[in-house]
Amino acid sequence: MVLLILLGLFIPLGSCSYTLTAIKGPKVTSAQVQEIKLGRTTETDILKLLGPASKKERMLNGEERLIYETTEVKSLTFPGGYQAKGFLDKEEDEIFEVTLKDGIVQSYRFLNP
Image 1 (cartoon, rainbow, N blue to C red):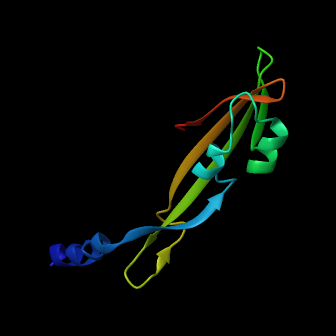
Image 2 (cartoon, rainbow, N blue to C red):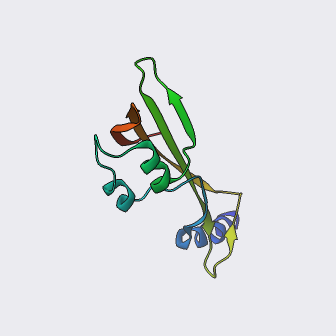
């Protein structure tokens, strides 16, 4: 009897999926990245293209790093569209780093959090 109840609870979960419900922070797209030219794109250009960075750091070698952090929140979605927001949410982080020297882009990359 207990086995039947457990199966009744877990079989519907097999048809569940996760649906994007929120994005926190600026999302950097591949189209935006293609606009960045090493040695030519300025900090002002980056701010126009990507908006303000989540963090700005000055490194010991005089370079600056602009950090763009994005968190995508995905909620468990049951058949019929009901979402269990907050209960079993998955968060996926993405970090994009731009390194500047004298206000000019020297490098950029996506980092694995």
